[in-house]
Image (tube, rainbow, N blue to C red):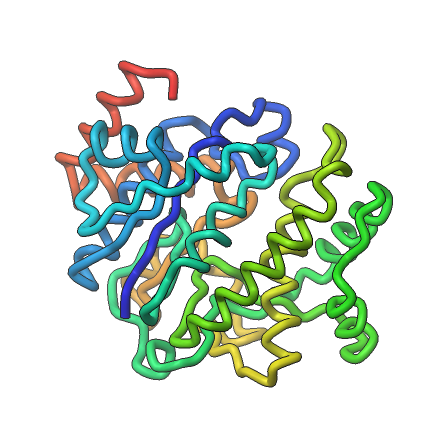
Length: 295
């Protein structure tokens, strides 16, 4: 199973206000790059290989400056630079669409200390867990409506049929059905492109991403009757512990610093300690880069 990272650098230019509003910003700039380093290095150690899909600036940072040991690098995401920077998840969508072999895409804030189980690696479609935060999706759908953005018909039909919102968290996403990902990414870009004129300064990019990435993926999988194998079972206590680095010593050696965990001092400090202890050479690369640049 191929492990893939994607890094579209244009969203790095988001203003501090936009980053804070999205709750996706790191507490300090250094933690952003420490996270990419620890994610790359832990997956490389476990799987032996990891692919990076990025743009020219991303390569300059992750490969040339931080010297992260990706086994394959594809510099193809500059072609997305005509899109607004707040559409930060489209780099992931494009990356899904160019995969021709079974893969698992992992976010740069996910770290692992053991392989995924065989059931997951053999699945047609893979996700992290079923996202139980329906309120976030309700807000996102209302926010899009208020901005004049109508959701795809298949989402409306699914909501009517399901009677609730069921979406897969894309901390990890992938599977063996690469044809599905090409169709899904094409549909997502079609949705985005048809609403380009409605992307205003007031639009919250993270709310939009919940719909065109996570909800649309889940809706299309259900419409095609393709089961999504989730790494974390729905409703388990593990969902509340995914950001705790003590998990590396547990039964599921997997950590995901998603959402507001990036703003927590204890989580960021533990991230730094993990990188400094396990990979001191790369820790020094990050510190040197931070001290010498404003990227």
